[in-house]
Image (cartoon, rainbow, N blue to C red; front, side, top):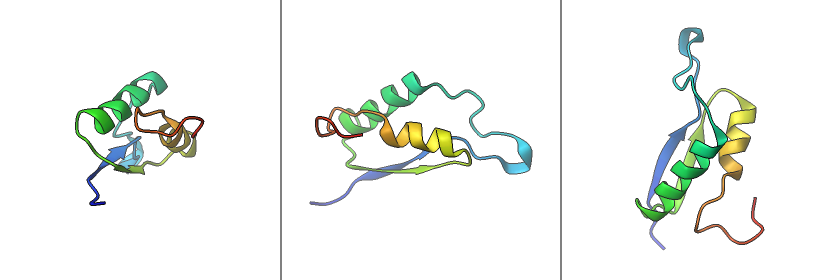
Length: 70
């Protein structure tokens, strides 16, 4: 299966400023569904400087996730 993916930034902190000052889990879930459904990506590279944000993004549901997957 050929891969098609994007990079998702949860917020990096160059010079102390976040590249994503607002971070809402509901928005992350919506954006992950858009990545899967509208962009037809089967891979997402998640980057960022805050472990909690990385975890939220990694666990965000997508329509192509297996039932019960986290």
